[in-house]
Length: 180
Image (cartoon, rainbow, N blue to C red; front, side):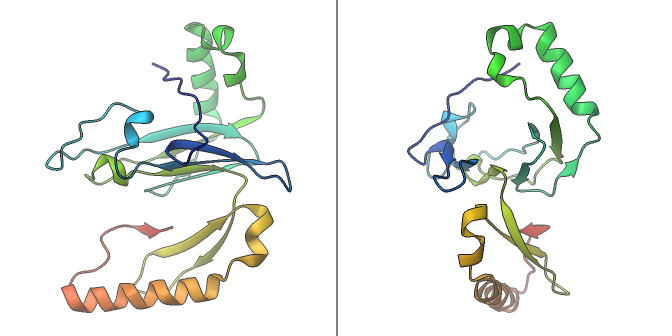
């Protein structure tokens, strides 16, 4: 089943932005507080939580980021998705979905979380990374035209300090496997 929603340009749901400096398209989600229903069906009830898996097919110069760390596939998923889409006539009805030279990312199942906490972004993003023993790998992503303006050292320092404080205060470690 293919869900075809138009991208939004108001920052809600699945937002598409084209950088005026380099012409690159960037996609990202904003599901909080109740914008996730623009992308997929949901139960908006705080006591109900679910798990999410995501498989994305994107142009070869893009990356995809989500709540879990991705495995870049070897192209088999792209070929399978293209075969299925062709068989059900998706490309005939929506030729814009065919991506030449595409690559795929598969994300493992998330922890049980509220729908508004699930997130993903795709595009030709750049990133800075920090690995500190005892803490999850941290990355800060930005559009390519903004990379030089990102004060990543300060952002990593503040984030690490907060994680260490809350680890001590609550006597529990950060519950996720990475921090983007």
